Length: 469
Ligand SMILES: [Zn+2]
Image (cartoon, rainbow, N blue to C red):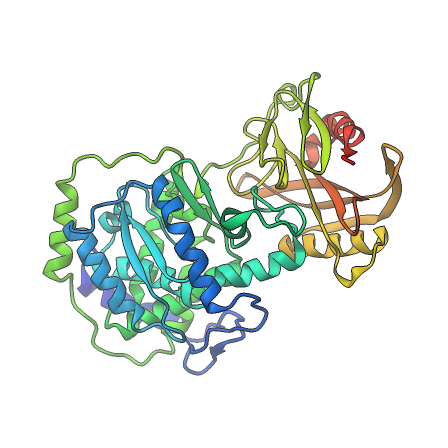
């Protein structure tokens, strides 16, 4: 628990330091009051009803994977009541919220579209009441600002889920799981991870701070919790909440920039008895069930030894739209109806690919059946979702098994870090025309330093690619 008297003092200091700070550049923030009052609907191709329906459909699938605390446990009851109290302060549309506690010790929480919210017992155990409220406020903000469907609307336009393993081939959305993947929510064995844009995370922090302020909690608790996260991160094997969330230090600054604009008021002092009792009841639970796989996939990727990159023997794969061969030591994510991700062991996490290939397809907008235009749209959507990427030169004409194709090299930042910095990454994009208006593409990814070692494998994959009739 954070001593609150000290907390209040630090608030004052913090406000002084950051009083002149710029607000993060978000369109819907009132620059004087630092408040977000609207939930934007522009650019969202989902109705609120659809959004709520998607979330509801996902509940049984999600809960099958998670060890949930019974609803009558004191911690479940407390979180349910706190969650609803906070949700009542959320700006904009009142979604049908639900709050469940997951019996996992990692610090994590996530929201499904339209209102279902989950929080790990590890989060409750690590926080003060106001800090736990801050985490719930952040997740409520993801719901009320409709980050999942806004992201899905952008992804559907782009159909290039480069950062997401379980993409969807073309327009054939593979049921709710495919839709959820487009919404930035992926489900693995035993875990759920979310991936929103940095702006969405900033917005969730700001709206979350505003919600807990309005509910009577010291919004500086958001900042102290980020500091705790950062400490844990420093200890190695960081908590899963960090894997999909920006640097806690930057988040603290962003939140502080709006706190300086909120009028001072008296906040709740200390933790209420129900919270203390809930926490006590959790400590009597015994050891929490470990997550089968780490939620939010907190695996940091590293450079792989050259000899482990690609075996000489290849395996064939029959996809619904094509046939392809790939090194037999590689792993495959996806199935015959979805995008495929192929990668050497340790080359990809649940969120990003550092070594390997993504094979997918999309239908270019504008109805043109033109490879140049398709390649241009593909490139621009890849750059939208990966802002650091830049193309090297112009798309070159090539062929894949006799079919006209375009090839383009890109350079960006790898998800592998060395000395705290991402190492340079090289990407090769190959696009060719499929049936009808479909453009099929292959994205080959490796750290720049290892790209040449993988080039023979990349070329062999490219030349094995055959469209199915
Ligand atoms: Zn978030």
